[in-house]
Image (cartoon, rainbow over all chains, first blue to last red):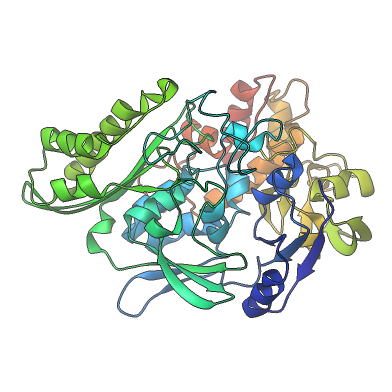
Length: 329
Length: 168
């Protein structure tokens, strides 16, 4: 691991100022991904500014409904919160499906959103990777495809975003609050992460020195009927091959409203807007769910080693929506 | 670059100067001679380094010592009260819940932390009803909640009943 300075600061404003002046510095939250990347030689910050105790570690009610999750709230506390379990069960389920108990106790909400891809070529400094080292090529495209993207990838990068939590947040219209050198802003989770394009080194639209301070969930009554479903290579403690977060509102046997997002398929949590559009106002039947899933996945461009993800994603979407249909009755 | 940290480990206060790169695991093992937390993968994947950090189970290999200045740490060798073993330790012995023993201190600390979580009513991915008040810790629940602790000898067949015994 490269040597680095470690610094504690008084508040968020000071953290932002200190990091803005340190181009090779990084914020440290729970460290469960960053410290690993530093040990692997993938991340080489020369300064860590500890922000774990700077942002709120509480989950609060917002005036007008909705909830605010402080960036320092641990994954465990988020998943266990009774209000979250009741009003946004897909979010609790998503968090519980990721990592392990002892990692969730340390990992933070802000850090979970900003974790890096687990693409094996990104994590291995002996292979080329445009995300790790721009211009060094993508070893994954000619390599092992199982975990890679099927939607929105580019010739420069086919990595997937690893977070389960972010998939549920994308489905639930969550908004990230940030504090950066240019002030504060609110960013929908669906717009926080980028598609790789020509610049896969940028995972998100955040600027250097911009800190996530909270995530806000807007009120969404029918999110009480929401689920997160994850398919992976072992029953627990593995990243998603495909995951689905969905919330469903029925009027009789017709879909009144729906939220749908996919994980494990793209460089960002994939909000399935095409499928949602087709589902709204349509019948809550397996046939229609399948047609909507196929419409969303029509743009999929799988690699030879991950073509299975297309029917898998379709089937998990249908199964999740059928579960929610059953639960709504 | 050096930094001074204070750790309270198994009730004893230690003050030490560490390189900022030092993990909590290395501080415990190499600097304080507390070797019950094991270095398995050093990447947070195997759970052999699990300790209680401020009362909660945590991976000590991905925790920087400098970021946990002032923390309260409990390791497997600090669990017993003199010769009186912790119920989880006794259950592991009674069920022969290990073979080589390398993962055992991490398994035990993880089980201790996990049982606190169950007591607090935390759900898991194996919990059917998200709003359940009291989790019934059946085999599926134990396996899911302990999935962050790998055992290459495959002693799971005895680890699961050992933990189940503590619950009953």
